[in-house]
Amino acid sequence: MGTDKTAHEKRGADIRAKFKQQKFNDVKFINRELNSDEKSELKAIEFSDSDAWLAMDKYSEEYKFTLRYDERSACYSCFMQPTGMEHINAGFILAGRGSSLVKALKQTLYKHERLAFEQDWGTLNGSSHADIDD
Picture 1: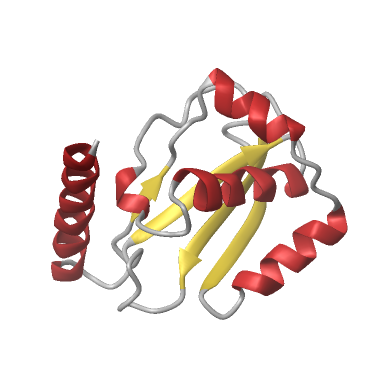
Picture 2: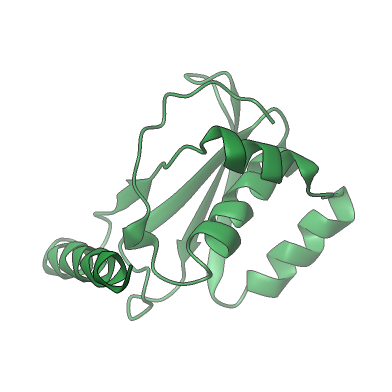
């Protein structure tokens, strides 16, 4: 298992290095979809409107959030992006989707906290074409 983590860390570092050489606004969207077990775990987590505000406040110094309705996907989207270029996730935008703004934020934070363990998003990868099931 240590080899997989090392390979993921190297891949994330390679991607970050590539983006540091490009223009400031060149970013990679991390659109990793959840598998069925992860979807079940996410659905079981209680997450109210108050929780959403508290979570955004918790991360407000390190990240910025963009929440909007996505016409193309016919759902709400949440985009979480580091505020500084020296951040481990500089060059990445972590995306989550949901049937409401709160559920889109909930999915994004789930990916950040449970799948990336509040660390390197370069280890997350996947498609953005799965159906919304929140």
